[in-house]
Image (cartoon, rainbow, N blue to C red; front, side, top):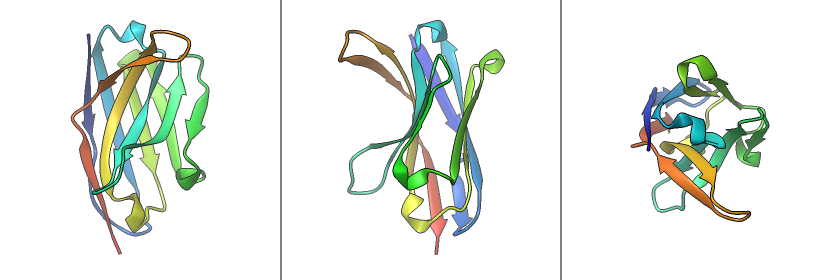
Length: 120
């Protein structure tokens, strides 16, 4: 089992910055990837960024150049630095950890979510 706890959300004006943190505990050695997803009201949950155990990073096109994902293995923590925030970045942000169960399937762990609101 893996537990994920997010922090760092809040209200920020457009153009501002926030840093989200996600601390993982439990069987973290089992995770192949960690990352961040977000879900805006009335929309589906979408990938924001993730990083695999080899350090390969993937970003959604909408956040490239503005958001940076990083991790501190010693602290079992993943960060999401969000700069140049836009109102359309408003969403609940979820930390995700996953491990591969087959060539095409994953098992996912989720944090409780943290609200990010960007005012115009």
